[in-house]
Length: 339
Ligand SMILES: [Zn+2]
Ligand SMILES: [Zn+2]
Image 1 (cartoon, rainbow, N blue to C red):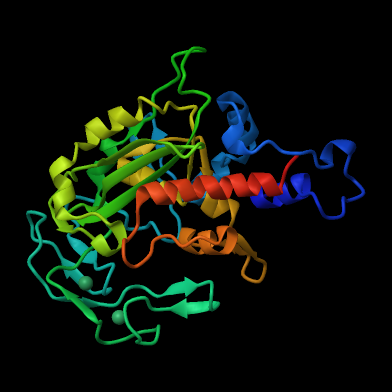
Image 2: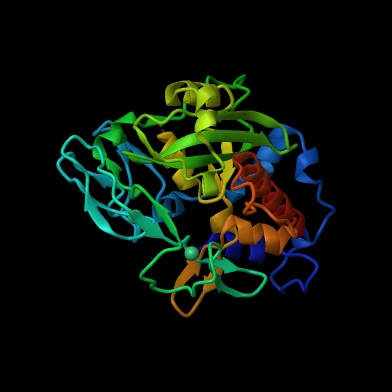
């Protein structure tokens, strides 16, 4: 049973109370999340964390103690996320062309002609291209051209680079009862998508960490239109190891992390963490006809639920803005579905 359904049953107020409701179900004035003391905030939100079943179904990384590496349960879309060392076949995630890497893992320049993937525009209720006026659907020529293809598959040995968030040091561990928003910006490298910027924010909107991260493999495309990251940003970038150490100043295995499809951020950070609130799961719309629930983009959720424009074409994504938006969505959900 999905979180949203549980919430609707248990917490919805302001509408008719079902006959099974007890007095405890009736609305009381909720304290806004940003005013709550950390421990109270944590306990208030803990019921919203993903179950093991949901972590599995949504492609979150797990730690396999026997193999001493991260593992992912297969989903419909992650079949070629990790490829073995002699598999040089790649599919371009922009233009969908198949190509092969060189035997040393490098790429020879090949023209990549593409459109941006059409997006669902909530304001008009249909799919729309953001790059040009070509109709969504198969199109022979893209409106943009680059010298390289880009791809998502990463070398399988990367699974050994994952680390599990550190265990709590006991009752005095200040990291344990905290809730933070986390978001990353990703860029294309010779090892698929790697993290290039990480932001960690708290419920009061404070930015605790916002840093650029140097990818481990050669950069193929900064993906600047979407990532907002440029070559110049790499001058101040820190290593992934340093970045994770900085994150672990704030986060241990008990910290609640909030994000939108946070599995891709954790995957890029090479971090295994199980205490997660995922706004893409919390706000997904039920689709009873096809038996699955559809995820809504953070951009559309921000427009629909908060009346806010994020990820505008001018500035690209900002991981600070995105993680703050996730927390705002969570606060809105909490205010709507109070105990
Ligand atoms: Zn186009
Ligand atoms: Zn391509």
